[in-house]
Length: 194
Image 1 (cartoon, rainbow, N blue to C red):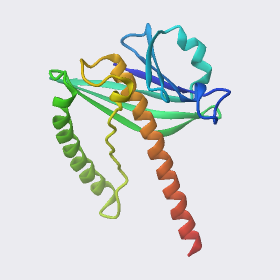
Image 2 (cartoon, rainbow, N blue to C red):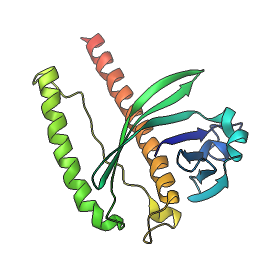
Image 3 (tube, one colour):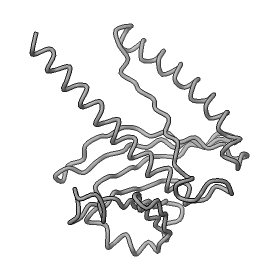
């Protein structure tokens, strides 16, 4: 399953509403559908893919990747970018893990948490091998989607759940990216002050 995602920015950008707070999510395996997330109102809308043509020129964020399957697991690894003045700026990598036999998100939570702990250990070891004991360059952050805000708590997992998850994931990437940039600027200012 591939995913393409965009945040729509328009004439109301910066005014806290309108197109700026709408997200579009599409899935390669169901190209005829598009999911629009209206974040301030916490609404998820399933639309015909023709709606994408109306929004195409307003897309600011993109996410593309690959799906890997092994037994009961599906792993999706994606790269997220942001369009800034017709160039793509890297935001980060996204990793989605799906354990197919489990349809209940609450049942899967413990297993996913254990997987993340194991992944953090392996990433930290790989980071130490590459960069020594000096400092970590790899950050792994868990993003828990806000399904309940969209009225999606409970029930079977659907594409609408996935669209909300990807929307929250990109917002998390943007927040992390902004925090890292701010931290780097502060470090540069401190070094210049010395």
